[in-house]
Length: 272
Image 1: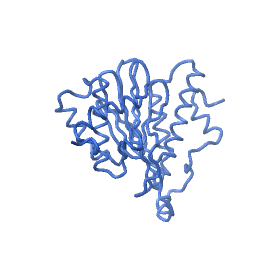
Image 2: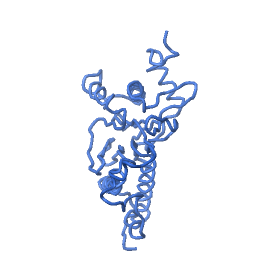
Image 3: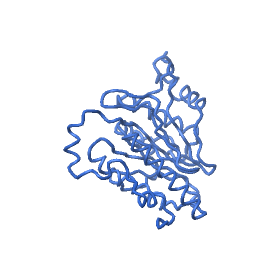
Image 4: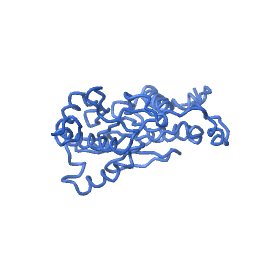
């Protein structure tokens, strides 16, 4: 067991590799002849509110111009105080999330203590970097947001990554995916010049802000799914605070839509 306390090193020692990790450097040229469109997740966002971090994602998965699925989960629990929100390839992202979850569990059980935040962030960086051959082909990029509540600092933290695994910390908010371009400026504007910055919003207000931002992304990005009352498809929203990770119930999401979007004319059948 030369892998020490690291589950990822143990997997590598046993011969495990992320799919595509052994591909040659000319993979981008080979990708041009692929006869299929890869499945991709779309818009995710995170913002730091008064009690911690709120993370949200729409539910749509696309392949080119085709909507494959409208109930994809893009906000994935990693441990009791951490989540990974995904855009890009769901298949690769789910694999990375599973390995990350088991890495944290393996370390906790072997070392009898939680892995440090710095080590958690490094593990995710290495997993994203190991996925580089698939990302270079254009069929397996993963651009995640990692959000956690740091119990040592007693505050929520948001980190985002590039396709090479470089990690950056965001003080107030982050967004990625196809709809990110439509809402990044809106997030900056509301945080900078809104009635109050995100860090002063309570849970209800931050939830309303997140739903409005996803609704805006869906208005300008065809790959981002919006809330459809008839289908009952709601975004995935989670919060992380000193009390741990919580999934926002559907009844709270519906009530927030009525309060923050429907009554302002944001939903078609609520206008007038």
